[in-house]
Image (cartoon, rainbow, N blue to C red; front, top):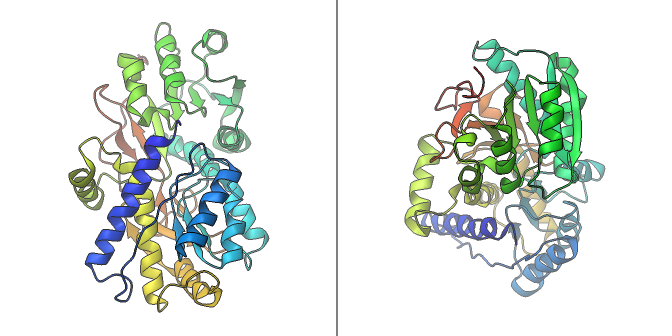
Length: 386
């Protein structure tokens, strides 16, 4: 399974949070006990069965995980029927729409990060920031968008397309590619025939993106290259090699490279090994702390069918501002989803930072170049732009 490695980290992150919370006295003196079910290949049917087992066999008071691929709206019905709390990181606008459609029924379901939709306007705002700070000057107003046929990739690409004009961009190419693909020739031919100032690739498989950069590098256009998610995986750098240097990517949820984030990384790797993926583990880790803190303030957790108590917990979660490893978690109460900074709020203490990273050394992960005040490095022009 392509997501199995993340699944291990989600279990690790939740385990570490529970151990730390228990060491601090638990929730009002009661220990937190984690239980795990494998969602394997994922999909709505499998996801729902796993959650149902957690409720029926273990009587869990909350379900906390990273992401599960599916509709992003199936587990919420199981949660609503049982009256417990759910915190996930599916990063889907479908969650926001579902909660807004019936907030009373779905009171207990929370998305711990901003929806994937925000990658679109967030990317346009990032480019505007680079220009305003004098770090980048566009060669023309053209932007090419390359996507794959999936809800995640399409939602991001469509959001860029919808708002590009308001930032002075013209979408000169909007192309859906069949994936997985290792042959980018036809797409690159179109880019070279009409070079854009910016290329945004919202397809996310690291091997495909690595091949794109290898083939792009033989005759590059003077374009900034932004790619979705894939460059954060070491396999991208291994495949692309020298051609990876200069590539931009982003995450709406990740461990910050600050005092809190690096201390977490140290604890995490000491427990789970030097190669453990703390960025993924940070998601349920923060989600667990958010729930536990809210539950303590609300007078405790509620077991299945104790919706009265869990409504109090949910109300606390909606009103809480939690500064964790991934930055600030503050829920939009209409959608039970985290606000994003700086696109939804210009106050870094009131939104989760939409982090932009750039690979500046093929042997290392990306450096955090935006948004201020979280950045730990400066953007540099890619080597292929002379």
